[in-house]
Image: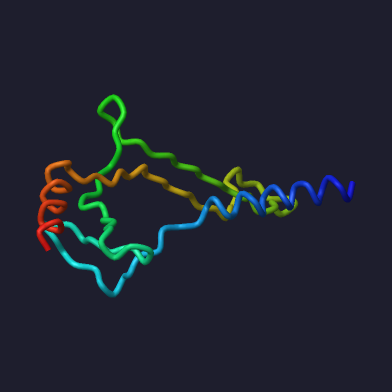
Length: 116
């Protein structure tokens, strides 16, 4: 059992070295051709950008979303003649959002940054 746990921890430890996030210099960000561009920490001549537009995702002309309603009925008092009970509850609403950047904007920003 201990060997199995050790192997799992070793696997995730090795996997963690592969999942290092790209470090960017947030304080050196600039807006280029309508895109926010940030130089990377490892190479200040290499930039990453933030998507410029957000929109709802659609499938068959309907927005993609999920709705989960939950309810917890309260106990009914003995001898109650009503068929309506009280309950606590709520809901969760989740929309699928896409972040897009047109290829033309990316190419224009690349050209501008290469000139600098």
